[in-house]
Amino acid sequence: MAAFYDTRMPQAVGLKCATLLHAIPLLTPTMTLSIIVATDRERGIGINNRLPWRLPEDLAHFKRVTTGHPIIMGRKTFESIGRPLPGRRNIVVTRNIAWQHAGVECVSSVQEAMVLVQTPAAEQLDSDASAPAFIIGGAEIYRQMMPFCNQMIVTEIDKVFNCDTFLPALDMQAWRETAREAYHCEHNNCGYAFVTYERVAHAPN
Image 1 (cartoon, rainbow, N blue to C red):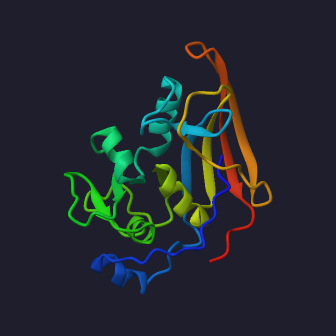
Image 2 (image 1 turned 90 degrees about the vertical axis):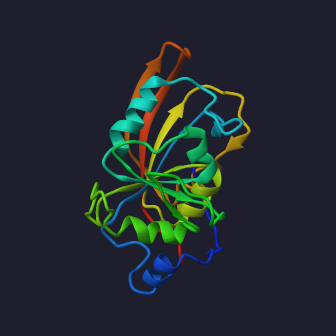
């Protein structure tokens, strides 16, 4: 799962969020910023920008956990989905300042995304700044967001799939497992578990 670290701080360029960056902290102490991801036994997460497995239970779990909350993703992840996910505030991080899509809020850095989730959306799906926000991929967004996250919700699939995108190992000095629900998937003939990790020592700024 995710032993991410990144000492780089990409500069926010959006005028609205750049102004707000000077006014409020990137993450309020009470806010839960959570990575949600599924991995195979070797920490594979995808191939050709697609999931390499069919696990309806994980899709249902993802929907159940994220509905009603902001979700943050990269442009390629959004394009692999093909549409805004309903019942959620869709925030897409992209370097292409000309890119836009109906039903999506676009930002140019993960810092802008963190500011945005702490400001009310027009739809008011989740106006509570302390409510959870979820990072849903892809690998580069996971890596950039990891220093700011305080929770991970990982579907650990006990099987190896053909993947071209991976997550590095979780640093257990910084994270502790707080919940695990284990199941078996008949379709893939393998076990899987919904596992929650909480940060015990936050990454330095």
